[in-house]
Amino acid sequence: MQKLLNGNNICIELERTVDKKYKFSISEVAEKTGISTSAINYYVRNKLISPPVKTSKTRAFFSQKTINELIEVKKLKSEGLPIKMIRHMLEKNLTESFNPRTFSGTFKAISDKLSVNQNWLKQLLKKGLISPSKIDKDEYFFDSLDVHLIMKLNSLNKLGIPEEYLIRHSEYNELSEAEALFLIEHINFSNLEKEVIKAIRSNYESVRNILRMKELNKLLN
Image (cartoon, rainbow, N blue to C red):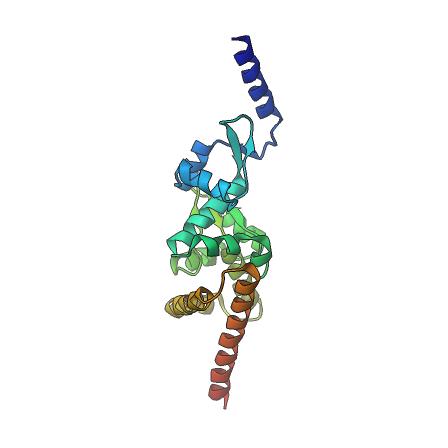
């Protein structure tokens, strides 16, 4: 009995010393993300997400960073991407070419952080240009692609292109989907090694940009 009490005391002491950012139990993470505890453990074992801090053999605590990663994994899986590709997309070196920063908060908070119009951000959401995941009543998780897109659209706005005109990018969502599917076909011919995927994506984007420029030159001529 004394041994058990000592073990419990050790666990309590460990929980007191854990970094405060590690505050979510696995059941809380499952509730926040809609992902089962078995799936979360699978992602941890396969090093797809940031690991929790263990305070005992059967107890661990997760950070908000892990929750954000799980939400992004869930989103990418819903888009039909295989786990191997998701792993590569989440790795730091591969995501740096997009924008490694994510954001969790309200629309007002992200509009303040990125210096963009809050109502315009909501229009981007309505038109399907950004797709943040809702994590609470007014809280959203914006993944790296959403943040990067907002910043690039904002840059175009600062160059003189009206916000209401930039919304028209939504008219080309089907074209974007077709290009993404075509890129996946290219990747499926690879061995899924990180550097190979990175090179394929870079060259694919160059090819698409060249073809767009050729069409632009035709229009200008």
